[in-house]
Length: 208
Picture 1 (cartoon, one colour):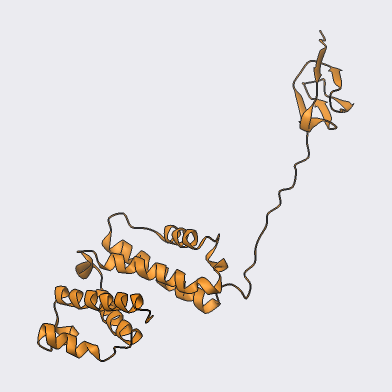
Picture 2: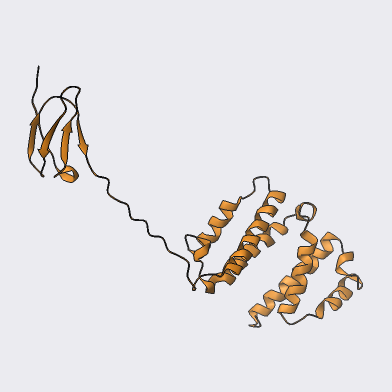
């Protein structure tokens, strides 16, 4: 027994082909325009609606973005952060999380799109992350590169602030002239913090 149905087709399906493909009763009912009524056989109506193409905008890095060498530098720092996170923390941050934090900080969708003028900011962000991790109480015991990282920082900062010859005097005043390698972890950390404070002072005074 046939039943008739009636309904209005409006909105996005207006102007589309309508098919009633109930078993044994498949028919095509012309073209439908907005607000017109349709009459046909009983059954589910399926609309053939062509998929609308989605546009995806892809921004390609250009000369205004960081260079290949700078990308390698950031990758090395991210790897160092992840390695240190893994060594020190119970629930360490993974690569994806570190990259996501970096790109969010620089307000870009990919590190490839970091402006060249912001490279120093990106580098400093990751270096600050490393410094935080190495300041943890467990870092000297768990980070195999902890002492070397402190040596590098002390020498680099003293050179940066124009005090490359200040270390011998600092060691003579505090530790009877012993070398950095002879200091305990606590003593080395104290020298590190003293040098970090000198850098802050130089920055406040406009020397950096």
